[in-house]
Length: 239
Image 1 (tube, rainbow, N blue to C red):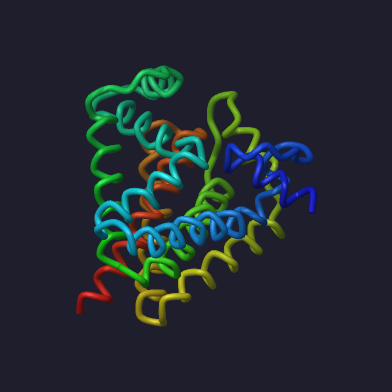
Image 2: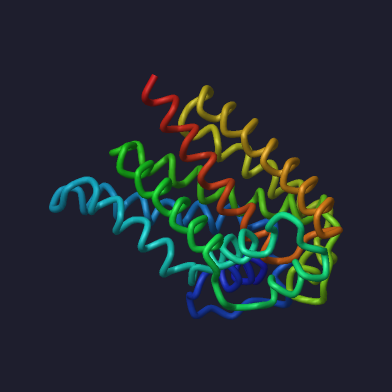
């Protein structure tokens, strides 16, 4: 129970007391993410009875952002600001430590927010299982990505990577994969392949450009995973 609360403490702004560093709750990351997705999906369906689908979808997305404290959105923006062509690993790490958001980061953040918003709107009542799958699996993808990557810097990301245990990562990976199939075998298979590819490409890119990953890189992968899963469900539903 304490390890579950540790995951809740790290992934949300809810006032709970965890037990130790975030890595101790890694196996429960998909569970906490699934809960967040369920809450957001419930908001999407419930508010659609009062508001147009676009507003209902925006309220669902707003809930996710508020409850998570925009933690992973911040990481995504920092990564896109830092990893511009021609920058040295030292320059990249310096920019990742800068709390300000530049033009690249702002554009990336707007694009991912718009993609998530439009996907949630399009999925209608199917938004509940799709959000459970997307938000839950993306938190598990972050754990798997951290485990297979080399940490750099001295921040929370390095401590998280080094603190992960293989059994916890295996459980998180299995739970994430299972969540992806909540919306059906076709969407699940497509999302699983998309997530695996995203993790592999991100790891290769970050290691080549910076020599490893930071906490911001993990946040970026979390956001990319969420978008990939939502889009897989949109594509399969629109066929």
